[in-house]
Image (cartoon, rainbow, N blue to C red; front, side, top):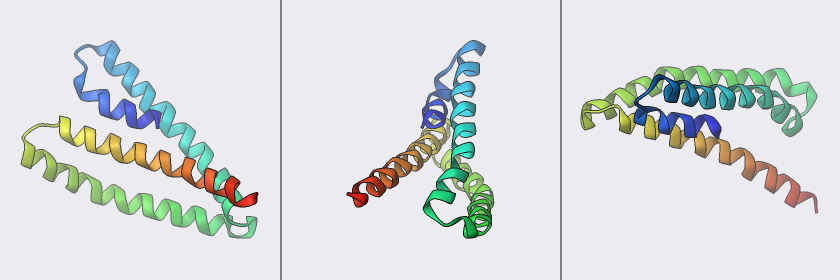
Length: 112
């Protein structure tokens, strides 16, 4: 979720220090997600299916790397500025991060 907040706040910066700190938030959040994703996949699915789930995870990430630039370019064309596209990207990243918390909460709640 830190990467989402860094993405949302990125276009509002006026100084290099501000942009560097928002890039740091984005990088920290992205790195922590990718290091935690493998643990989530191995906990949710069995160890035998770890390679398959990791491959599917990377496949969907690769597909969306082709789709989201077109979508965000359309937003920039319609609004005439880049701020809205950064806000949309950051919001989607935050919602993705919240889905991990919801999944963990449901997993703990179902154990009881």
